[in-house]
Image (cartoon, rainbow, N blue to C red; front, side, top):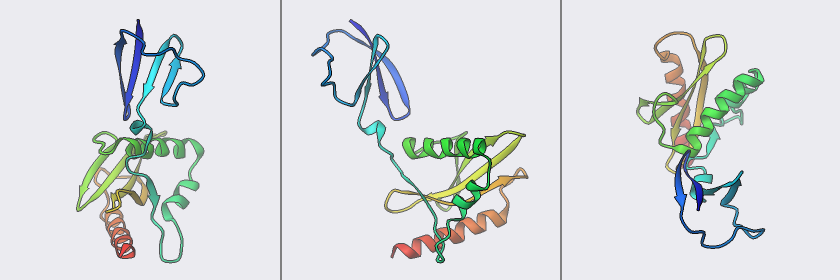
Length: 163
C-alpha cells in the first residue's frame, strides 16, 4: 500500500503499510506526518525530552555555562546545543557524543571548527534532569583536573540545593 516511516527516539526505520486503517485527512493526529507520498508516524514518546537540560545556577544566581555559551560565536553555540539536544531526547547516549567520567558525571563532546573540542560536563539528578555543570574548550588530551573538580563542586552544590 505504501511506505511508512516510524520514528522512535532519534532513530527511524521503514516498514510497509499493507492496509490503511482510515484515510488521512484534516483530522490526522499530530503524531502522523506526511513526507511527500510517504507517511511518517511519530510516537508521542519520541517527541518528549527524556532528560530536560537545566543550567546549574550558583548561589548568587549566575549560570556559568549559559554565560560561557553566550560568549561563543553562533555556529559553536549551535553545534554544542545540538549535542545537548541529542542527550536530552536520546538519553542514555554513548560515544562519540557522550562519555561517562565517573561518580555520576558525564561529558557531552562536541567538535568545533578550527580543530577545537568543546566539553560540557553534566549529571542526571534524582528528578531525571540533565544538570549542565561546566563547559570548556579542551586543550589537552586528558580532561583537566581543575575542570573536573569544578564540575564536582557544582554537582555537590546542586545536590545540596535539592534537599
